[in-house]
Image (cartoon, rainbow, N blue to C red):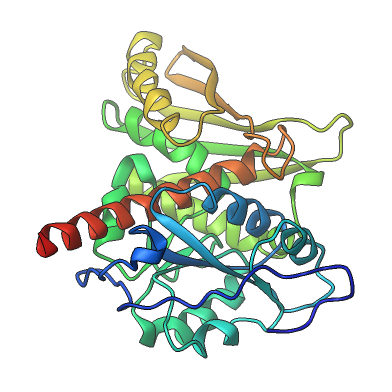
Length: 327
């Protein structure tokens, strides 16, 4: 593990025993981790640092390592000061371990993820991809979350996709939607370097996911990065054109979505829902929980919460299966 500058002490090493978990092959939990699966995070930017903090509170996952590539990365320093295990040795720190992690979260870039997935493939861990790479199975927790039990690599689409698709999927289940326009607005301060590098992939992946989960043929996705001060709260606006849209039917479809989303993203809310002349307008806002990110950065909080929810469901099922086999 790479040495950090004076005054910054990385957390304890993350050595764990037991077989590694993968879809279809539950592992025997290490009693030292109280029956939790081991987890690692690649990336220590805005998303990775917040995700690591969330994992430390998980009932089913044990944070073993946060991986960066540059010893000067601010996120690594902050996490090390908080006593969390970190390294600047890159993804090689994961593949060179004697005992692979059970779950690996990738919070880097779409381009980097393709290489990370290749390197991690022999180790049969569940890979949860928070980049818009489309390497793995796209997952929207309230729509197809249990698919994570059947795929080695799952992709969390984008923060805009996680906000918009649950609503659009619910409306499209009741109505024929001919056109969907999704406009995401996020504060510039909540957008890190990796996300900025991935804006083209973000748009393409979100559009592909909308088509897959709603069967809408014509889709347009736009992204606004707002420099306003004070920073604006994360917001996704949907404009839908379709047949037989009424305010009553659209509200009936959207209401249950909010309840299901708040199971893992408490700050999720539909703030506008109106219909006129075959045109529905729905606005979603998400407030962050305030861990290592400000309230306005709901985009970061949402994709992290969705990723963690999927991984915890995976872990809970695998741990319960192992418990049943051992009893």
